[in-house]
Structures are given as C-alpha cells and as structure tokens.
Length: 297
Image (cartoon, rainbow, N blue to C red; front, side, top):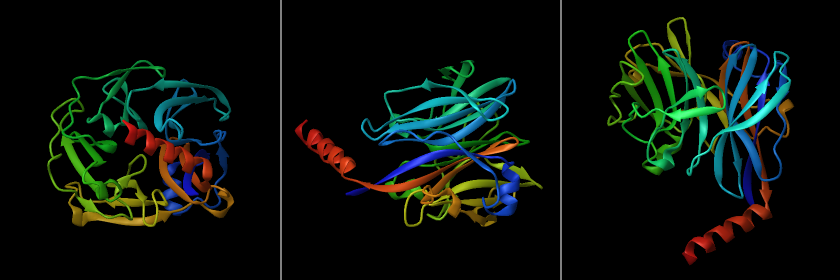
C-alpha cells in the first residue's frame, strides 16, 4: 500500500486576522463542504463575495486521471451551498485558483507550471467564463503564485518549478509597476529557502504596516501545516522575514488531521483545507498501471 492524501475544504466562521492572532484554529466554529468520492478531493480554496453570495474557487482532483480542474461553489449568506460548476479546464493540471479584483476586473491566477508558463485569466462572465489575458507576461512558470498590491505597484510571491527540491522549500519574489506591466526579479535567487514555510499557502494580509503571509510547512510531508511569515520591511529583504505562528489541524478536525495547506481570507470567514492520509491498494495498482503504460510508449 502507498499513502494517498485526501483533502477537504472547510469554512471557518471568523476573519483570517482573528485566526492569525490566535495562532490556532482551536475554538473557532467550522463548516465543512461535502467530501468528494473515493480517490478524489477538493483543495486550494479561494473566495470572493459578490452580490451577497460567496464564490469559492477550488481545485478538484481525481487520482485516476491525475488531472486537476478549477470549479466554483456558490454559497448564500448562511453558507448553504446553492450550486457547483466547473469553470476552467486545460490540457495541463490546474490548482491554487487565486481569485482577486483589480483595475475594475476580476482575475484568476491558477497554478499551471506543467504548461510551462503562468497564465492570468480575466472574468468575461463571472464566475463561469474566463479568458486568458495575453498582455500578462511572467518570467517563469510559477508554482502557487500569489499577487500582492502595494502603494507602488505589485509583488508576486511564488515557488519555482526547478530544481525539484525547491518545489517545497523556495520562495521567490517578482515586482511590477502594473499587473499587466513588466515583471522583474524572476531571474533572482530565492528570498527564502526553508521547507518549514516557503511555498505560498493562501492570501496575504497587510496588518499594522507588515505583510503576513500563509506558507506551507512541508517538513516530514507535503502540506503538514501553515506557517505565517511576517515581512515588516517594505524592501522585502530576506533578513526581514519572520515566522510565527504555526497553525496545524486541531484534534476536532478528525479524520482530517494530517495536514493543512491553505488559509484564505474571505471577509467575515476564512477558507481552509485539511487532509487525511490513507493507504490504498487501489492507488498502488493505478500507479503500477500508469508506469507500465509509460514504459510501453
């Protein structure tokens, strides 16, 4: 048997700032979205309120196809699920659907490093129709790219796809004057190398002049917990990056207590995903079949 990670999305009935201040999810009221079927999961939630409805964008993944797509779940003010629809499917794997508003538009920036590039999508009919924005050009294929608006322009925190060990331990930073402007800094070295909290894991928050960013603690296994990184210096120098606190799944999340890798701000609520790791003969069989199929080609 081999381990299989199964993620589940939850809604914490509290603002993200309150969770960071508490340094824990203990004591906060939770509502779980429905679990997926066997060998499937829903992860990487990001939310946007429009017209009194909460739109939660997620990655949905099936181990049998090994292909992630982006779906939206629409909830009312009571957080009751109204509908669920696929919104973005590409020939390559998609995840981490970072949704945000800027310049009078709604944008979606999913992770798609296997396509060889970072693609920004503009909503042509929110939330169901999206169009790739050709004016957006980024210097490399970024993993979990996370944009941040500043008084002077834009920052983009992300993890590079190469070398492979950096995929869970490196944080890079690029800058631009405008979202669709020229991005600089992609050729620079990482600003942080730390498996305990470098890969982005949610929405950054400005508080008291400092930027607080959820990052993934991947020590021991991928997505074990969230480490909050704090950057107080606007120059974003590596020496100014602090870490505190570390937020892990509390015991009452059981059986989803094996990991946590997204903490996403959605106004009065916070979106999270937690995982349970199971051991599956079925997953092992699919992996062997896939390896034999690749060797036969």
